[in-house]
Length: 82
Image (tube, rainbow, N blue to C red; front, side, top):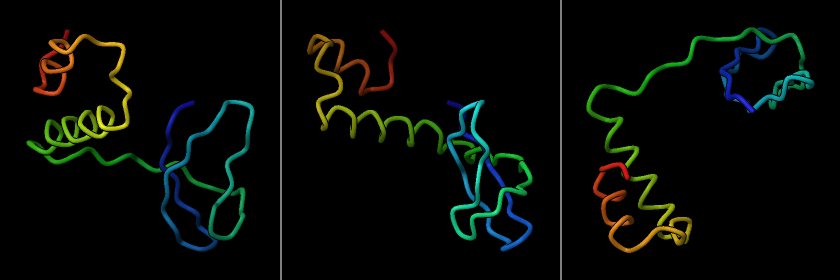
Protein backbone atom coordinates (compact mmCIF):
# COMPACT_ATOMS: atom_id res chain seq x y z
CA UNK A 1 0.00 0.00 0.00
CA UNK A 2 1.47 3.35 -0.96
CA UNK A 3 1.61 6.28 1.43
CA UNK A 4 0.08 9.48 0.03
CA UNK A 5 -0.18 13.05 1.31
CA UNK A 6 -3.61 14.66 1.06
CA UNK A 7 -5.20 18.05 1.65
CA UNK A 8 -8.88 18.29 2.57
CA UNK A 9 -10.45 21.46 1.12
CA UNK A 10 -13.52 21.14 3.38
CA UNK A 11 -11.74 21.29 6.76
CA UNK A 12 -8.28 22.48 5.60
CA UNK A 13 -6.31 19.61 7.16
CA UNK A 14 -3.19 18.02 5.69
CA UNK A 15 -2.44 14.36 6.43
CA UNK A 16 -0.85 11.13 5.17
CA UNK A 17 -2.75 7.93 4.41
CA UNK A 18 -1.87 4.40 3.41
CA UNK A 19 -4.27 3.76 0.55
CA UNK A 20 -5.07 0.58 -1.36
CA UNK A 21 -5.93 0.91 -5.04
CA UNK A 22 -9.49 -0.28 -4.43
CA UNK A 23 -10.35 2.11 -1.57
CA UNK A 24 -11.50 5.72 -1.61
CA UNK A 25 -9.51 7.83 0.87
CA UNK A 26 -11.47 9.83 3.45
CA UNK A 27 -10.40 12.71 5.66
CA UNK A 28 -9.74 11.48 9.21
CA UNK A 29 -10.98 14.82 10.60
CA UNK A 30 -14.25 15.47 8.77
CA UNK A 31 -14.89 12.29 6.74
CA UNK A 32 -14.91 14.07 3.37
CA UNK A 33 -13.97 12.07 0.27
CA UNK A 34 -13.21 15.12 -1.92
CA UNK A 35 -9.48 15.20 -1.22
CA UNK A 36 -6.61 16.71 -3.15
CA UNK A 37 -3.31 14.83 -3.45
CA UNK A 38 -0.48 16.93 -2.09
CA UNK A 39 3.22 16.86 -2.87
CA UNK A 40 5.14 14.96 -0.19
CA UNK A 41 7.88 16.85 1.59
CA UNK A 42 11.33 15.30 1.67
CA UNK A 43 13.41 15.05 4.81
CA UNK A 44 16.00 17.83 5.22
CA UNK A 45 19.50 17.01 3.99
CA UNK A 46 21.56 15.30 6.68
CA UNK A 47 18.49 14.16 8.60
CA UNK A 48 17.64 11.15 6.41
CA UNK A 49 20.53 9.01 7.70
CA UNK A 50 19.75 9.85 11.33
CA UNK A 51 16.07 8.99 10.82
CA UNK A 52 16.96 5.70 9.13
CA UNK A 53 19.36 4.68 11.90
CA UNK A 54 16.83 5.65 14.56
CA UNK A 55 14.19 3.48 12.89
CA UNK A 56 16.61 0.56 12.65
CA UNK A 57 17.47 0.85 16.36
CA UNK A 58 13.77 0.85 17.22
CA UNK A 59 13.22 -2.21 15.01
CA UNK A 60 16.13 -3.98 16.70
CA UNK A 61 14.71 -3.15 20.14
CA UNK A 62 11.39 -4.70 19.06
CA UNK A 63 13.20 -7.86 17.92
CA UNK A 64 12.58 -7.35 14.22
CA UNK A 65 16.22 -8.07 13.30
CA UNK A 66 16.29 -11.48 15.02
CA UNK A 67 16.75 -13.39 11.75
CA UNK A 68 20.13 -11.70 11.19
CA UNK A 69 23.38 -12.94 12.73
CA UNK A 70 24.91 -10.70 15.45
CA UNK A 71 27.58 -9.42 13.02
CA UNK A 72 24.94 -8.60 10.37
CA UNK A 73 22.82 -6.78 12.97
CA UNK A 74 25.84 -4.72 14.03
CA UNK A 75 26.50 -3.69 10.42
CA UNK A 76 22.82 -2.82 9.81
CA UNK A 77 22.65 -0.66 12.91
CA UNK A 78 25.84 1.18 11.92
CA UNK A 79 24.26 2.07 8.59
CA UNK A 80 26.06 -0.42 6.39
CA UNK A 81 24.09 -2.73 4.14
CA UNK A 82 24.44 -6.48 4.12
